[in-house]
Length: 337
Image (cartoon, rainbow, N blue to C red; front, side):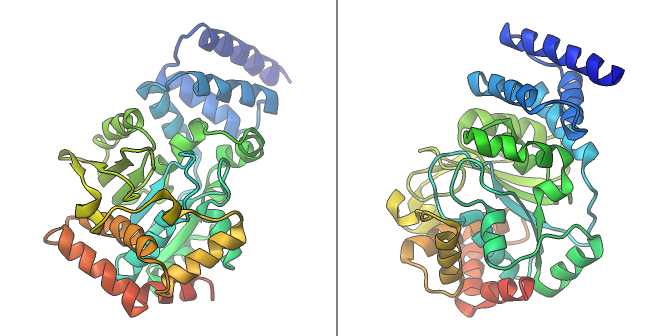
């Protein structure tokens, strides 16, 4: 009881400081996130805390503190092979179909190993966890079962709340708020398997800059992608900025996907059922030209991020072969069998 009272008093002080436009140190951010994971704060306290970061930009120190706390509390996962993750922040308000998850299966179809980190939607109709659950996938946390999926299908799925106590604690609050929060910023950074290769989609240039700062200090090879019209992935609706450990470039939709597509072409529908239907259709090779192009572009940039292949065009050809041969769809069938 004393600990609760002491912690609440500290939270009040932190909130007052934040309301006065002060920021947290990395250590303070770590402590708050740790206490959220322990279930110490009430929903009202957490919602108040979240609201601060809707009103101002998060600092690098705060982002680092939150990220470090989530990783310190995470249920550990370890694989004996190199893995890739393709993940976006969400919260871009675009309601696209599940592009990064589909791209993950295309990459798996090339023989590369994917540990896809995902969650339920909080600001859109269908997140990656929603569509995987709709397709019949059962979330799991046992390392041996996840490793077997990697062996059999070249892909496994890590449902974020299973591995992160803090994300589980705030899931209902995020859903009730229905707006982009600091937890959208966290998701791509906290894959518990610590992938060697990462494609991280962000919704604006400022967050891309902060991701770049943090990832430069990691051992991962990475590509941070931001469509210049606000998508947290390669959308082919506009040019895309790609940042990696070597620098940054802007690529045209023509370079990445052979043509520009319209926002309507990549809509995700109005329900998890719609999303699952689109998902299956694309993996079966029955997607529209625009749907296929966007998925293939995101898969190709993931393959290119590994630096195992000669150039982007080689990676695109591998992605096309994975989708057209049925290997990508085979990975889905194996993981939900």
